[in-house]
Length: 210
Ligand SMILES: Nc1ncnc2c1ncn2[C@@H]1O[C@H](COP(=O)(O)OP(=O)(O)OP(=O)(O)O)[C@@H](O)[C@H]1O
Ligand SMILES: [Mg+2]
Image (tube, rainbow, N blue to C red; front, side, top):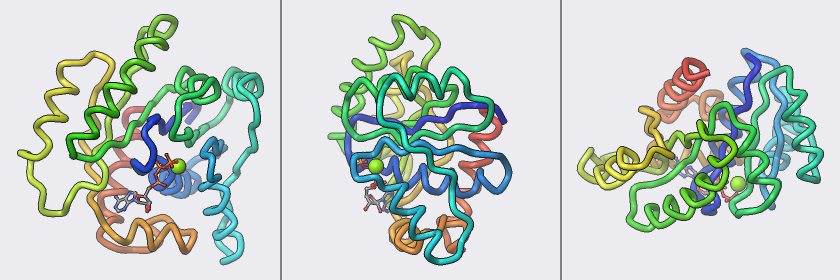
């Protein structure tokens, strides 16, 4: 799979690194994957150290420190590249978004999430001046296990009304096991719990999209 998957949202704490760690771990079992960690806390690097220390197969995390270096990696990419963008707007994050074949934007279902998406839409509109096809695939994350469609309607109608966005059908629920698995350096699939099924569904959907 010769694609660039970018998990991006300038809003912090929406689950970018958690989702990136899970996708990276599971996709690395099927494909050759390079991972770029643009998170200020270096969450994926931390996760990868936990994996190595526990004797699990480490991910191939590449250190990138400038927009120019990232551009070169994107332009020469020959395999699956997965980028965990930082939760802030910057040149390097915009380079990452601009290079995406599959752009995934996690959001939850509270009203404040719409404000975050409005700010992200401004960034996408700038990028669409030279990449008119770019679209963010909104991934609903941290959704209460009992929340039905009613609580998601506001987000769904925002996505329908804005050509900058489309939606993944997979939904990731609010589950403590996402934190527990991450803290052991494991994907939720390796951790083997209820979250595993929804993560497997997301991975199938991402592979189909690619
Ligand atoms: N589906 C989920 N269920 C429960 N907790 C979750 C879920 N997804 C993420 N979290 C938790 O939400 C918090 C923020 O997640 P994460 O660090 O992945 O966000 P982020 O978007 O990468 O943040 P930043 O913008 O700071 O890089 C973490 O404590 C993580 O464990
Ligand atoms: Mg992060």
